Image (cartoon, rainbow, N blue to C red):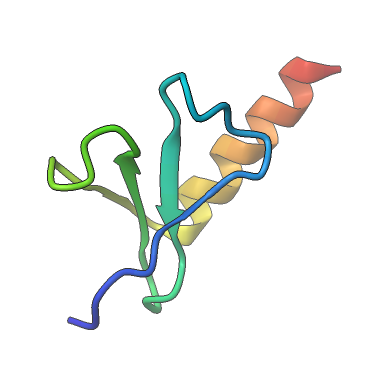
Length: 61
């Protein structure tokens, strides 16, 4: 499997917890804790990630 290329949101506060997301590998979205880059990686389908983002957007309104 190719290496994940993680990115952090430009809205992230460098002093607080934040997640990093990698979408460069087809068929998977990888999520990890930015404060523990060597720690566990949660892998979800792109559809599940889209549903999660949609739920966040709905709750923000």
